[in-house]
Image (cartoon, rainbow over all chains, first blue to last red):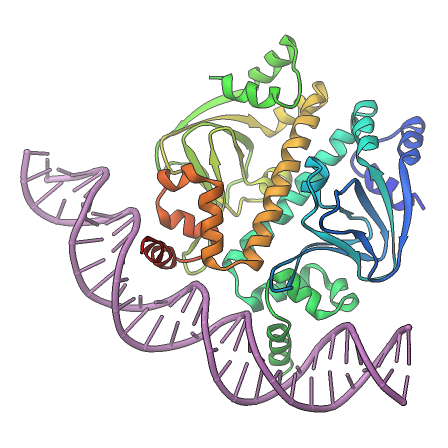
Length: 191
Length: 191
DNA sequence: CGCGACGTTGATTTGCCTCAACGATTGTGG
DNA sequence: CCACAATCGTTGAGGCAAATCAACGTCGCG
């Protein structure tokens, strides 16, 4: 159960046995059925969640009931509504499972204690957030500079596995385009 | 010269005198004239830069010679092409000054040493990057879900000072819309 | 079996872009 | 210190990429 998360951390910092035990002791295992919420907008995000199986999504819903996906959470990724988590404000994002999934959750107070007891976690999350920052910057630049087709192509190239796993309209929702547009882009490619 | 940066760090971690000295010793002061490059695309980003005066921008230039602003750097902000900085790949972004500016730069090797000597900096940048992550998430959601007008209004509300300081077409370039569109949005508001 | 989820296709609309021209400033070199 | 060039914002005309709206076929699940 802890294989993936320990390997993920081990890629950036070396934990000794004691630190590993401390860490594992604050992880709570949760299973989610497809469509089940991990977090609902309006509630406060009290956990940072590491996905060990399946696929989740974090998204907002606007006045016209349109969903806009902020991020996906695949195996090996962390997912939460970070704004809510940091400020204790009600979450603006929903998080739910696109497939039957499993996560390891850390409660906020436990994570804060962990930072103080094992400063390596400051380092680990610093590195993790650096990578996330770069990815988000690239996504922003794509969004403000590229056509729907360019963005779709780049997405497929970057996440080839996701194309198989999730419905196309979820990808549309992530890219900020309509499902119809994706359908037309794909059609045009086949001939 | 060090007031702002020490205050900025002090908001999240407490440095003792020795740590403060170590930190200051790796900072290099640079002044930039308006339009002067801090980093050119193609070069490798070797510094993380803290803005103490003025205003910078990081941006890409596409095949049609259109500029797309990835981020602004105002007083108190950090700016670099983080992807290049982390991987030593040639930068895809240019960074230059929109006004006469001053920055404090840390070289990559010095920053890495600093992380090891003073782990509080892992923590400081972890917190900084958390905030940046939240800001980027919000920008992404705005970009994929809002109209040009909504985005412009939100920008003005979020950065009222910038509206006065920088040309409108720079804001357009940051939002991924054209200067003409901003002009029309503004016109329509006056009556 | 029947319903909901998903993707496709067509017709139409629209928000924003492109292109072009034009003043008002700003700044700069002779 | 002036003349000329850039820079910046504005306005109009026209075009286009993508959204919207609507209908329909298929599939898989409860």
